[in-house]
Image (cartoon, rainbow, N blue to C red; front, side):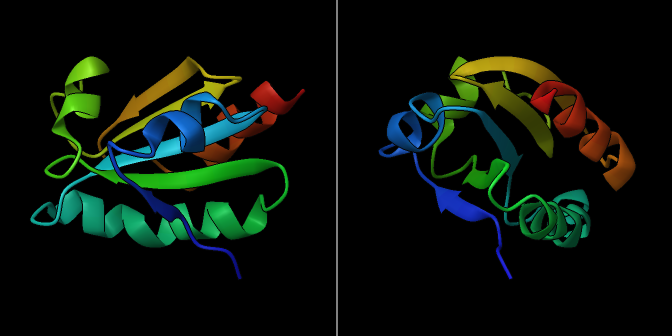
Length: 108
């Protein structure tokens, strides 16, 4: 079963921006309760969409320059990239069907 991969500021460009297709990025933090609540949902999306969308997690305390670049002011925040460009953004606790719908819409 696939899980979301951890990405740092050092490998964000090759792991997210240079990837063809869709990449869902979970900006999270260690002390964030809502982030911990979302973790099983993000891992489930990674498993259920394996081969269709890449799912990664970015710890904002370890990649603050990336978070700042994308204007992440609250966590969790989820950005959906398509061919290196942000196409969707969600903040806070998001229901799995809403994230899945965004993935499906951008796969079409």
